[in-house]
Length: 215
Image (tube, rainbow, N blue to C red; front, top):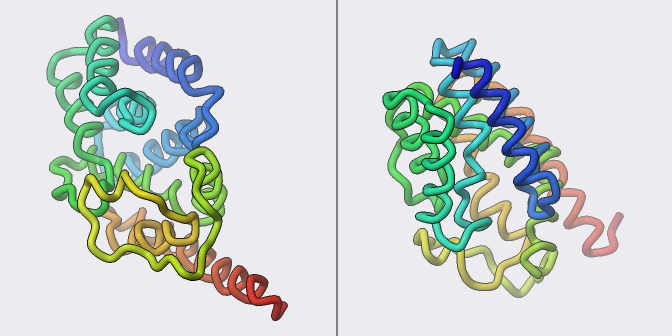
């Protein structure tokens, strides 16, 4: 199977798996991340096939959407094997997907140019207007409150505590989204992140004014 056929099959597979997702990890999230990954790969000189394939498959393995992280990675591993992705590229895609998650900021830096591109693409879609929409979708999916002034953002997060416990949508801005601008790997992503970050700051200022009934 050639690269174009593999990518076409991956798009169809991911659409079938995630089209109905309501957690903010739906097909259109994948579409946006993939388009960003293609753009960043071209700008940064990364392998476009590896970047696009990893971007397409990255949330198939997401532990939030699977019984465990291991079960999610097995799904990706089985799909890559069934579609005869060459061993080096298969291993690279699995490494990217297995190491790109935020996990409360506890994951070590990713290793390859392709991993840096895909991680940046995913993080860009977590901020700005799309990030705001997704954080509230995810909070609703998890049954979390929009905001509780008496519940402060958590400052000490492990990978386990990041995934567990009660939280609010607004706290997630401080625990993750507002940190992502400074965690971008590539110059292109850092430039794109600036505008998205400012948009979130403006949104939060308006949110608090409306919360207090002063606007």
